[in-house]
Length: 487
Image 1: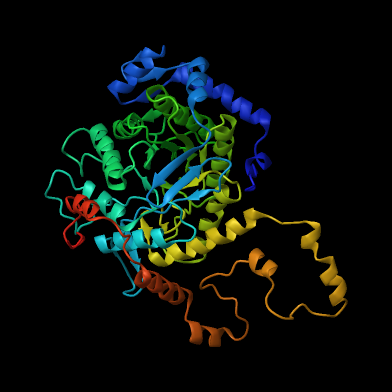
Image 2 (image 1 turned 180 degrees about the horizontal axis):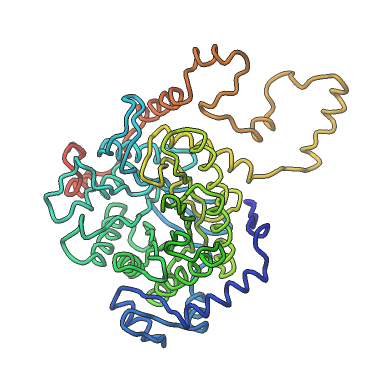
């Protein structure tokens, strides 16, 4: 059984959770939430909510009605199999959207991301031992042909070309990259493309990220994402990304209660439209550093608020998203490593069910590098090992071996035992050698050099998934020039 540790219990009590719930109900019934969608307003009105334009108020009875249909677990499918998302399964780690800016160590510069970077991010996600779910990367790079009225789908097609794992859909469809119709229709078409390419027609084949608009709103684009996905019976993650003292109250507690109301409004909307659809409760809320008025993603307060919101998600018996490899660092330095590790542990040591941006992004999500991606992979492996815990049984105590070895003996005899190999992990390029630092660097290079060699090995060994001619022809309708299959 995978260990499930409610780390939040060290930071928030049951009485405090009940207090947040009590004031959440007051917010929902007295303050209300704005959802910028006529269809959403109609749905809430049909179910007895008070609706004033797009301003929606609802009570505990309607909340409980929606929560009663929300599943505790669900599966997501692709040609490689399925992933289970829920408390009985291991934490799903999802990759990043390729950042807008790449730190290029070979040229010692920062530059805009290109389609080649997008391709390489997909390859690392697909070949990763710790990234379970790649994320569709739609950054509208400068080298992408933007002359058509749909340059979103070509970017989605790239994800389908390079990845066989179940794939995650961020908030990527916008009026900028999709002008062929409504965004609601675009989200439905995105699901249909996955179904057709996978030839999987009656199961969830993707999952959408839906970030509420703090304070107490769900913007039109996100509302269309939620509605479009759930109308196709696809799961959604409703997340908050509030900023204290800017888009949420100045206190951590005030931010938690406001976010809780906002997230629940999105979950209720999804369940009222499609009862039983997968809905995940999530947050990447962080404080504002008022000296710069910037989102301080890699801060201890971010960890505390995400722990508090994880507690609320568990209180409502929902699958929970938390944890993210987040930092405002602008280089692969001590700040980057320490903040990334700290923000990951809410998901991995706290055992939430899903982590987005688990590797490969820094600089407040805007900056990235493949070197950072593989370093974050090592961090994830470390934290996964810690969360496996100790295996303490009479057999594992090895009393007979201790008795046989005795005082001042040693255990370096024969082949390395299976028990040793089973209980230890070995980093791919972190240094564990002893001796002169100068000699080790001369032999192995510095950390970025070692990471780059490992990346190159992965990229060179990668082979495109074997797909049918029909699948190739389908994607070739959308793939950017230079990335189409040869037929």
